[in-house]
Length: 377
Image (cartoon, rainbow, N blue to C red; front, side, top):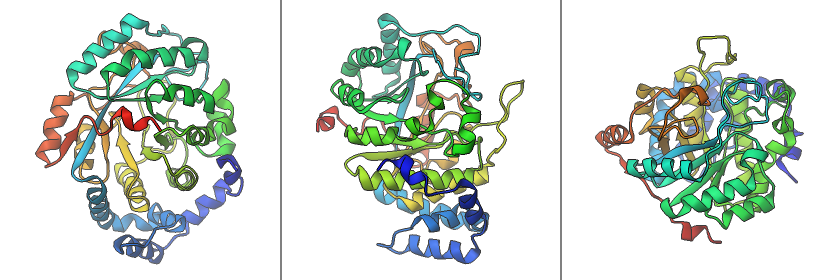
């Protein structure tokens, strides 16, 4: 049974109503479990932790999140860097700068341009590389991705992907070229609203996308990432469906590790898409800490979409990986061009600046926490 079949048992509106109906007592029950070794928080407890009723308990949640993270991960933060290979895209996502209808230069890096980027990223000190593209199999399909990974693999300890969903044999093929992890974000788990945000293109197929992690699990990919684009729909309901997905995957594909990401949209000037369900910082940390209390082993990452101040505060409170010095346009490290970027970064500090800040908090930066020899299973 695939995850899309599990989802049919849940109604978005009823889940949302049940979250808003949670009480102080429900929150205290969940927190009592979090304090007790060997007791597992279930999905009903998770609903309480992301509910409005949990708002007065954020300080307690923060402390428990710090303790749980340090028990499993120590005082470490892993560094990774995104490398955009292509901004060509056949999708029409109304919130994305790569939308097929947007008129700007479409770029797909060739071998020499990829190696230019490689040189800059190596000088920064990176060992963990996240390759990204728009969703255009014609421009950046399986053959292109495999070739790019073969070019880059000798220079990096870990190579991960955030590209169009593929089938299980494709993922098995890429594993042979050094694939470490794949991140695929559902954007929203609200099936009724999904088509509104994705009016055309392969991404419009809700079930194909939501079952991608199943195909990754079947391919025995070492690490699987999931998440939602925060700002599209009610974050509390979105959180529950992310948690449901995570629990399902951990049960069915237990050989893989998991990472949850939290890309948050912000209102911006101009006539482009404006998020209708903006999270405050207070709500955002509530969501992050609820996930840490649900699962003390899941990795959690925070991107340069967030401000310097916010990222500084979150170093010791549940996050395990972070990017620094990111560019979101193809070729952007060697030749920055903001006009072809997917989105504008908020925290523009260099890796060395981020490293100093993290070490000042008593944490260690980890450039490499895995060797590709362990992926050969």
